[in-house]
Length: 280
Image (cartoon, helix red, strand yellow):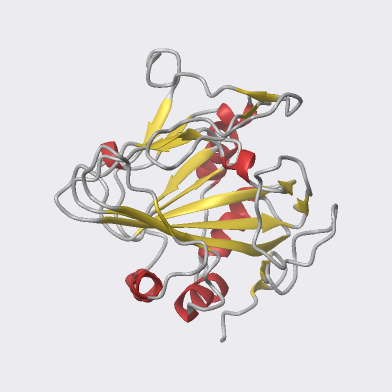
């Protein structure tokens, strides 16, 4: 069984900056497993599949969500790889449940950016959870994830952005406060400390759901694929109706205030027992 060790410096960086890059924590067998899963997923899209290629052209951009129940490679990765243990250590969690798989693919030369946003604005979740960004291809720093260091501590919930290529705001009605406009991160480069790392398969970036993050596109000569996995600690609960567009996997069966755990959100790691599916 894989036994990850997260350095105290990485835990401190995650808490301070809201994001950390962990190097060489996933062996090639786990990346190969996700590779096969993504190819199966692309060949058999789920109901949440989206083509978000922007109007400006360039390479195609696609994504899909909540497919682990029909993609065995995703389920095995979630239950048996070191991924859950890594995020459990970073969050200081006693238990970790798997909540969502999401793959992104931007083809060579894709100009569609992923706008500055925070995941918390899109999800009906309260409590401690996190996102794990796993590259399946090499990413240069300029094509990798960009994160505003410390933005998870700003105490702000920002207006969600469209991923359709225009980066426009969601339709926010009066009374849907305390939403704030996303600040102009790129327009004031000296004001913010932006983290970005060149990454290789085997690395992963873990970030807080309130951390502002973005991606510029894919200026390389090859496609860029990554998995974005979401994990919930024992403190995470279903927060129904917090925002009208916030989503969660259908038929989850949770009531407002209940812990995020169950058939749709399997418990995969505990601090006491380690990976529960490691022998599967």
